[in-house]
Image (cartoon, rainbow, N blue to C red; front, side, top):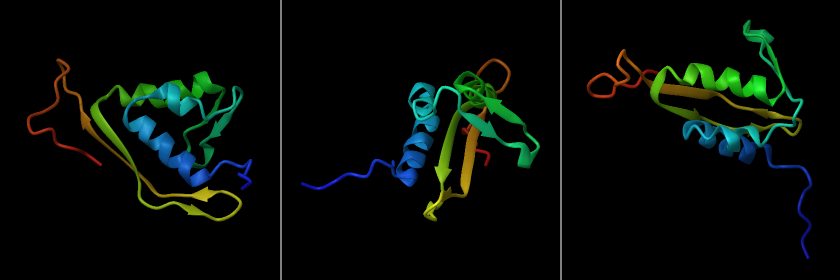
Length: 108
């Protein structure tokens, strides 16, 4: 019988989470967070978001500006004490009237 690690594969969790964000499946994405999780983005001057409701609102609000969007992880490196990853967010911006511009131009 093989033993499975009690520690989740952080790289796989990251990929699943980004897939959920790309589909706007916020329920699946947020299922990875503890109820009182803290997302600290102060290093980028964005702020700190405490609790799943605050984190979800932080993610949902800006994505409403896009008709479609894609979250892509370029590379995942598990350094043994955390995961490091460059990430690209691309989207088709909404225009007044709720329709995307002709040709669905992606901006990254």
